[in-house]
Length: 388
Image (cartoon, rainbow, N blue to C red; front, top):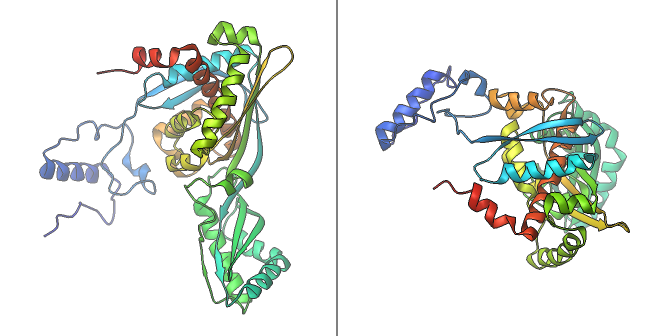
């Protein structure tokens, strides 16, 4: 007989059920989940976020800053919460933030915004699929009305079409307000596809996701076309300041970029920067984002230049940053506090959060690149990153 995990049909996200499941674990493994069961909030708030609740995963959290952001939505100094178990990470980002503050801050722009669901429609032959694509264009307004009937904040922006064999793949592009929006656009696209099926006699079958949305997977298509927010962070750093704070000069950093670009190309990397996933993951965990979205959000395009005066221009483009300030895990107790610390909790704040994360990532890029060249990379990990 299988021992089933205890559940309650009426009040499963409760302190009592959490304790019952921890007792269940202790009886079968001998492990007392003392720390897992230590938390300060009412488990009822986790309904819709977790099943079979037993407690919390407590990840150390550090504070970096002040980070000076010159955004269109985030302006001024911010102290950034970062949840991580990697020693030196917060210190490295903190050092980068210090440098960028000295140069007047980071300029950040959100240049595009789209969340996708990509159904595929299958026909008898390629010509039918082509004709169906023309029909989609002709009936876009009706399709948009059907899709938007399911949501108050989701707006259908456009539909991309990709033909292969006797299939036509459609990418429905939505804006989603302050939500990350994957579930929102999934429901909206389903209703739109059902409307299409009911009103186009050529359609016999479709699959709601034909995998061209590449949900929680990186893709070149999303690097080009955007998934979530497309964020660009940039700054110009005087050579003298770079040398005094980071211990390297702009010409050496610039030459390093030429060499590492070749390495990235040879490896087939989706990221030409140093470690954007570090900062993104740490802030995601602190602020209640869906951490699996780091698979897409960590793709990055680095560009650097040196002007005639020797000043170092650095920028990072994050083409698929998927963030939310409303819904999902953002309302959980710890995560809500961290968003409030940034002034980013609730509606109307998602682009502000995206700008803060973009600026944070840039701080980490300049810090790590400098540390590798200055010889601080290994020594800092020896000093701060070893606890055993």
